Structure formats: C-alpha cells, structure tokens
Length: 146
Image 1: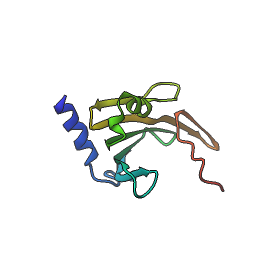
Image 2: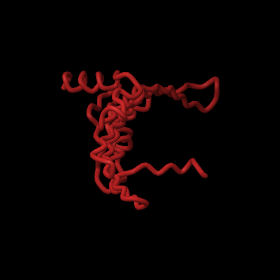
Image 3: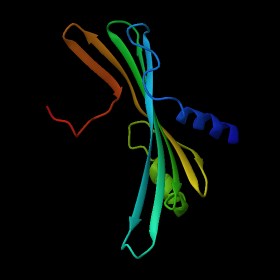
Image 4: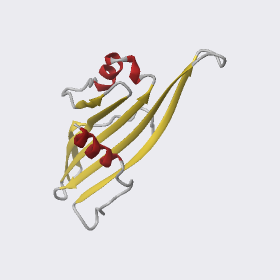
C-alpha cells in the first residue's frame, strides 16, 4: 500500500506544461500542480476548521490521424486537515462520481489524509470536413460565453 501511495505521489510531482509537442509527436502530455488552503469558522474568536488540498491534473491527447483524436484527463487530489477527520462521510462525498460510469477512486483513506483519483475526461473526437463529433466523458464549461 505504501508503494502504491508513493507511486501516485510521484505522479503529483510531475512538472507542469507540455512534455511532448503536437507538431513533432502524435501524443501530448501536460498538466499542473496546485495547492489550496481552506478555513471555515463561525466567528474570528472561535475555533477554525482547516483543510489543505494538493491538486494535480494530467492531460493526455493522442492524435491518431488527421480525423481522430483521443483525450484522457486524470485528476489527483490529496486532502489533509480537519474535514478528512470527519470520517467516512467526507471520503464518500469526495469519491462519489455522478457520471454514467464510476471513474473516481479513493486510493488511500486514512484518519488524517485522503488521496482520490478521478478519470474525469475520456473521449474520442472524430472530424470529417465540416462535421465534428465528440463521444465520451467531456468537460462542460458553464463559466464561458461567446
């Protein structure tokens, strides 16, 4: 179990940015690592609940030919802090996947930390002249308008 955790932690430390170029190779791999501290309190003189999130995304694209592109994107999250100590209720919420297929896994769930991996984007894009169709699990960006 410790070896599995170590392997996934190394994935978190991969450098961000494109590692391969689309012009030279039919495969690209990119991503990023971020961290976010959260605090919740009722009043400043009271007690605080803290959580830290280490978030990593790996973006993989394979350009099979001029018409077909395969995309797979993996999100890894390491949670530590007071919320994790709430027990299995919190880890159940984090590990829940509302998609057609359950592609979210709580790899390690301990008393003080939780490591979750989610394959949240997995699709194939077909393009033929002016026709384009993408099938599979995709991202819907509700925050952009054109």
